[in-house]
Image (cartoon, rainbow, N blue to C red):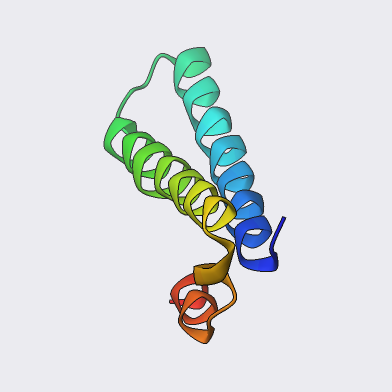
Length: 74
């Protein structure tokens, strides 16, 4: 796995764990005030990072370019 793909995958795992922890906290407390935050963490964080990791894994020539690293850090 290329470095950029691995970085995006690691970030996706972090967002997934954060989203699951927030969802579990909301379920236990029965206070769903943070549902928009939970949804954004899961969609913008986990899903998009996983899609980018999959893309860079499928296209290693693109992952080798400097722009891929810039994409990760922005």
